[in-house]
Image 1 (cartoon, helix red, strand yellow):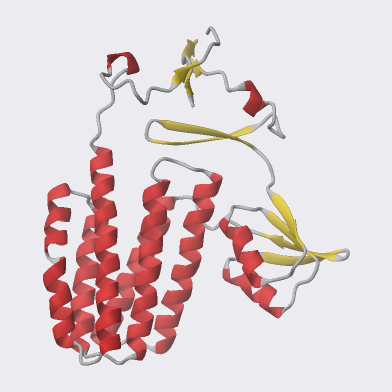
Image 2 (image 1 turned 120 degrees about the vertical axis):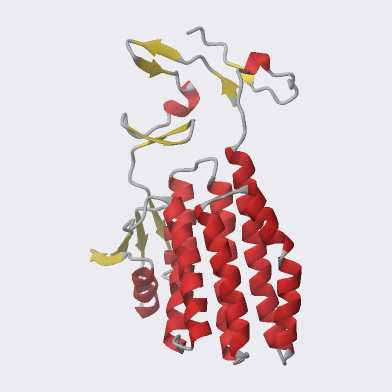
Length: 286
């Protein structure tokens, strides 16, 4: 990392890219992406790879790391099924199988919101007695894919808030996993209502991240866990209910991080009293 001069040129802005990086670009065209005052640049290129083994885990990994295409020597039913789950297309080209990945989402915030909505909707159905085993499985499958989608988007367009989004996606995926296991234990109906209420309140925080509201939510988690344990009659029920609340609490803590991050002030580097972490300045004269 180094400091470079931002040049204003006839109403536009110009910054010189590091030669050792730009010279490795495979294309003269670049993809420019941004978030707040952050701007990222990467070469416009088709990302591809090959693998010697035709395993479903390899197909999933290719999706998560942002590949556009993956070539396999073989593709059995499990590979085709895995490709279908992440929305990829399998084509036979000569002696190889080509997995072509398709992006359904481009907005990380939207994907994380969908994960929380899926969890909230699932708990609502369980609380009202309308959710079935198929509903639980569908929510579990959707959460798995959406978590991978966040990883994919953050690999292709790494922006500052990716650290938050990856954490949230992981917490919501794990919360759904514990809801799935809890459903198999047939807990009291009142327990679902308690978990649904916690998820609903977190959904409100997701939409409007106010520090005071997040702090209030976090202050209730100990009592929620106690209430959950009071309603369970088996150890496994208690474990999965408490772990679901734990992951909701973890997510709330990330929202607190995001709320603080959003309120930060920035001033010119030369005005800062902190010099220990100052990036070195480029020698280029601009």
